[in-house]
Length: 392
Image (cartoon, rainbow, N blue to C red; front, side, top):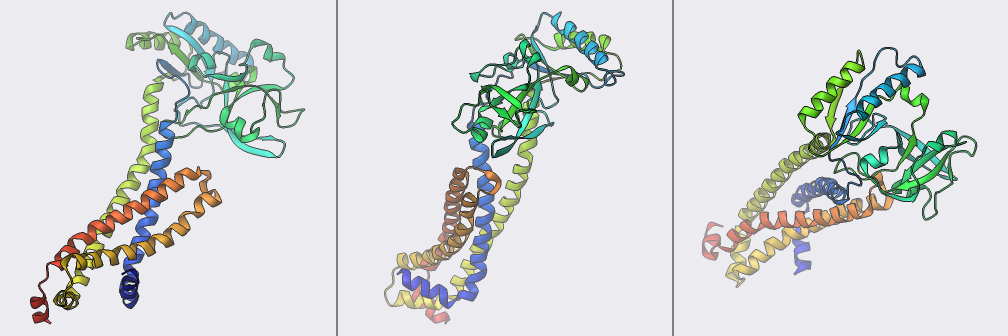
């Protein structure tokens, strides 16, 4: 039966070529779509890695004189710190770089250990940062006042960076960079998704803010008591505005920034799904139309087969089988190119993403072909032999 189907397809190879090309293009598009969907789903299932509830972001903006002298910058920062400490609802605070969780800002650098190099996000923070976002310390320790006098800049890395650079080795006490100018690892924290629910944990390191850092640091994260609402936010804004002159103060809630960040990431995916949906509809209509046209052209052949004793069921099986064989040829070609992605580590995504996407794409194309071939095949099986032969 299978050999017979291949012979029928080969005899009409010119007619079937465009049909197979349609299926191949559909498979490639669905492979790309499913790869992104699987990646987003896997990232979504990973724990966030920190607590952002009741955490507010305060952006002080730039103010006159602060960037010119360290003393001026420190005076402004200390004044702001005292105001925040005087507010009962503020539990923990920390100055930070602009790349706070769920922000559109990023800061990264290349780090190296022996022959291994990788890009890592770099976060400039204060001692209260870990308590504020409630990271879990898996090895070593967090920053302390004694680190001011450290010979090498102390850093805390996350698990993703540890695995990328150190593998199974303990990173504690090791240097990233040269021994003279490098950064010394003093601790390891759990992975965290600060880019949103749909972005995976990236390699990252924390460095302790020093005097020179305050010239450009204008963001403060504060952990508020549960239930702190608009009244507290208003009083906080007024107190900071009165203290920090000529500044554009902005207060945001991290849970709202998380929603905005997720929406920003999902927009390209939604656009891709819409485009893929239109393509699949066109392909489905094309498959349906081509199969319908081929059946009408083969009415005499079908009528003759019915006249010599072929059942309606066997006619339906043959036509559906031809469509499935065509799709199988297209899928084999498409799968050959798809398996190159995990083998060549394209886009540096986990191999499981590509393999699951490949499986889902194959299933989708088979289901699509079955749905498009079923009704025309059913109509072909209903052709009466005498009518078909009479028309011929």
